[in-house]
Amino acid sequence: MYRKTLLIVVVMLLSGATLQVIARDFVVLQKDKTFVLDGRKVEKYAIKQGDIIHFENQDPWFHNIFSLSDIKTFDLGSFPKGESRAVTFNKTGKVEIECAIHPGMFMEVEVK
Figure 1 (spheres, rainbow, N blue to C red):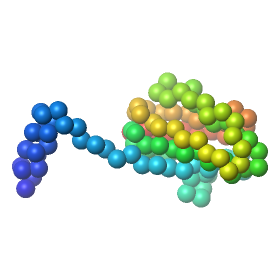
Figure 2 (spheres, one colour):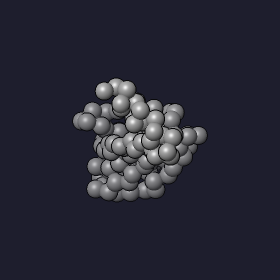
Figure 3 (cartoon, rainbow, N blue to C red):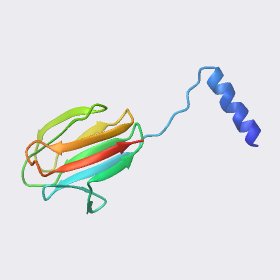
Figure 4 (cartoon, rainbow, N blue to C red):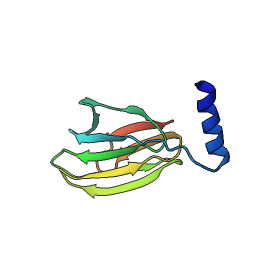
């Protein structure tokens, strides 16, 4: 069975077919001026290349999530409670994420 599967994959690659990797979606909350994932404060998190993080504001004040990292630079702009913005991580490496309004908010995402 292994040889048959390997042969199918090799034939697909030689014929120009691509293997599709399914990206996952994560929701990171901004709550009490911290980044929260799965109910706990998160400072470091690992995801896979192609994954998407939705940054959702649950605080009564605005947040402005951004990154100046080489592999992923973005600025989501200021957004109020109840709104969210998404970022797709297409390259591997480490991404430092901060809030422009609240300098104590910091999170590092390792994209594998």
